[in-house]
Length: 543
Image (cartoon, rainbow, N blue to C red; front, top):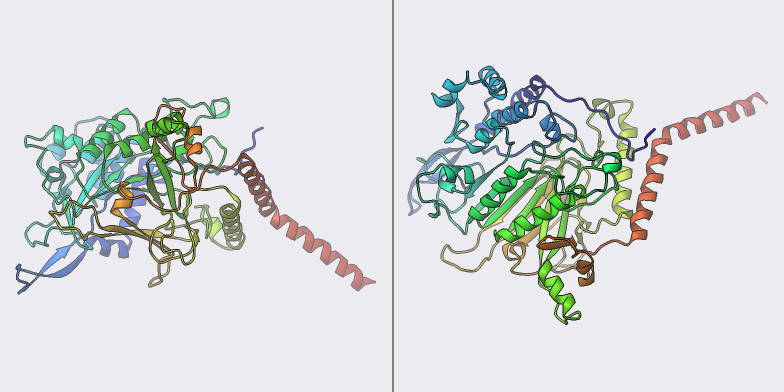
């Protein structure tokens, strides 16, 4: 007998046909089809602002997979349809879910070369604007069984040109990977000088999408739990090498790093088979912090999902050598320099803790939905009140310098349990020849209802995200960094409100257990109470 908390759900692995069926169903949604088609935009045709021309602007669909896209709950590299899943996702990104691409992908997954004529020949049916699936490095890596990871660059300095075909919905330009020269696999095969920057370094955004499934080590179970080892990993050696090189190649003003699972959090004392997060593989997470912070990229921001809610998270990081020097100098008067690393979690668009954390249709229909919604929202709301989740940003009323930064939205702990999605807005107020790093990023989280104000909103300057200016509000003590400084990592990162006490941590777990059990047995208690009351009423009437 084994007891796990929370109780695990039962999921079956998906087959390639089921996975492609999901994407086909999404592509049949009328609203999504209209979104893919883009809109016509009127723009000035010359520099003097005289004359107008109409161009067609399309969105760029780019991203990576998490477990339920992958086809296996809490999936890892042992999933038998790993390669087929990757290829199906790439086809979806390029709007190429056709019978031909399906058959070709299945043959490619089985390492047959009967699709060679398609890959090396006419690629007209793979075109979407100037994006070519067969020449995209993400597609090539998927063919090689390496996973679904990549980088896309957007340049917001270029004037819209009717000839280039790369203008994207919402403004800006998508920069082809051959021009961006950030992806190491493109640079390795290029014959041109990759030191030439073909985009604005002051008005550009690079988006790095990491694959935390295709190369992930299986979660340890039983006695294996709690044993830290470099063998426990999310990305795999090949992806780590790629990520380091890609970050080093980026000259973008803002660098967004996307992970399917949360990075900063350390929620429940389980082995990862119930609640997944990077903290369950601590050495892997430390490596992620080191790679990002040592790269020197400007304005890094983490984006994550998976947990069926939205949160703004912050950790403050100090170099290990600075902590050691501070400690050796008998606790010097000046604290070691720190920099903040922000994470924005946004999840999900179909179900959430504010509706029901379960994806099963029975929990969203009568008669279970009232009870399911009550349990889900009540449990997670109480968790946010009692748990020592000190990385969640708190924004106080009337504090313009609030720890979350400037912006509208809710005060208090920055989380939202309802259905949600996020948008990022970039304010590039720097001239091309300026050496300062002015400008800011605004993140907004919206709920389901149209035309409502954002549920969460925050604004950080590029200097704050880059570490040139310190974010206010840190209450963590330097001694806490010292207590964590025994490892081999270059940086020590901890929640900006400090480490929780052991008493608070275990008291919160006990409260969670009591609350969950109370909510779980609530229907039985109500039914028993109704039976007892009904019996008493019946007896009183009979007497």
